[in-house]
Length: 99
Image (tube, rainbow, N blue to C red):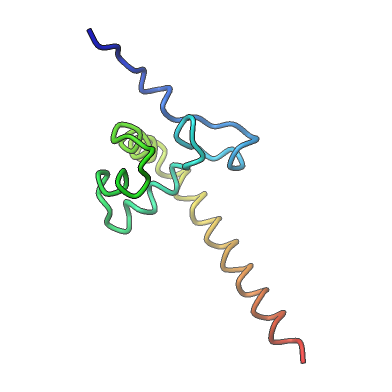
């Protein structure tokens, strides 16, 4: 007889890892990273191939977590993108302002 897994244990959030972002338990792989690849067109199977230590069930759990919390995760992704763009702009400006 096989043992069942409580799917609620597959996604965790702890404030001291990945700034509290939802991630796959036992890994540093965030739900946002999985969603990013999924939005680029990778299938869950291709994501598993890309990150060999993840199982298909973990990837599906991350995608399920995203769909249940889509508004919150989209806001986090937008905020992170905005911060990255600001950093790039600041860095570029710092390079162009030096002789």
